[in-house]
Amino acid sequence: MKRAKLAVTLTFITNGLGVGSFVARIPDIKAHLEISNATLGIILLSSSVGVFLALRPSGKLSAKYGSAPIAFRATLAVSAAVILLGFVFNIAWFCFSLFIFGFTSAFQDVAMNSHAVALEHKSGRRMMSSFHGMFSLGGLLGGAIGGAFSQLKISFSEQTIFVALIVATVAFYARPRWLPAEADRHVFIKEEKTKRRPGLLWILGFFGFCSAVAEGAAGDWGGILSRETFHASHFISALPYIAFSATMVIGRFSGDRLAHRFTAPKILSAAGVVASLGLAIGLWMGGSFGVVFGWFFLGVGLSVVIPLLFSAAGTIAATRFKGQVAPSQAVAIVSGISYFGFIVGPPTMGFVADLIQLRWAMFLVVALVALLTTSARFAQTD
Image 1 (spheres, rainbow, N blue to C red):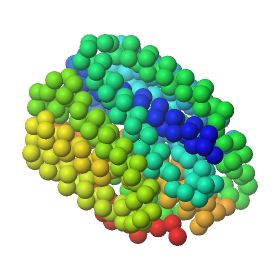
Image 2 (image 1 turned 60 degrees about the horizontal axis):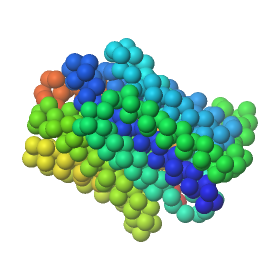
Image 3 (image 1 turned 30 degrees about the horizontal axis):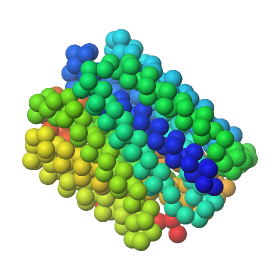
Image 4 (image 1 turned 180 degrees about the vertical axis):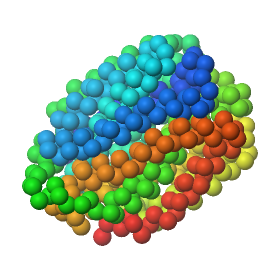
């Protein structure tokens, strides 16, 4: 069990590392391509489309063959996709590489989350929030690497090769440590295929959607807002995402303990209050400090949302809807609806930012995360 926990932990870190190292270089890429906020938003849509298209097959394959072999192969694919991402020849290539990166990352994401659900069920303990804390730790490390490499004028392509080597090394190290594929392999029957998916999973997915839009905005636009609106330096413009990732790490490492003590529904409601108020105050304050302040509290609030929703989806599938939907499929359903936020978020934020300025466009995110305060009654697992 400890070996499998280590494998899941390291894989979550690599997933965050790839994302964080890219996010920190978005302002550099935007300047290199000489594009507007609206154009950047449309380009970032490529990654979201890749994520969205991968969610259904990743859930089915993880259920059919077990999440362990899928997680290993997906992690290797992510390392290759990271290298493709580093060569920003033009807009068309950037869109293509982002699509591949999103597609492979989603396969890795669903497989590792499905394995985390299996570990929770076998151990009888909550671990999902801590695993997602490792994702945020990876994002924090990736953001720091990206910010430092940018400040030192090290090319993005050299950075991606460095990150890809780390990811590939972890994939081979973790491979023998996963639980056997049989641990969460799901046997399908014909009657099962015709059953409708529980509506509750779609509701949980909606709250995940609100969180995903906010997480995407935190990664995509924090650096742009700091550098272009408040004229921050290369490294300072990476600080909002670093602050966001740091609080996501702290919050997620505390999330399982808090959920045990206060229950997951109460924590989800409180998360909406903290995230919406903190971001609103930071945006009102303005300046680089205000952006860091807002992103800090946005991270505190959002840190527990996705892991608690995924955990609830897997538990509900294994108990209340046993035989109707596999836990890996439930995670994929909630993931698919949630990550639709990454599809509509970037272009929407880009267009609105060009109309009313990015600072005020971020209040759309404030409104969405405020909706999380109503999520309590839907996340009950008992």
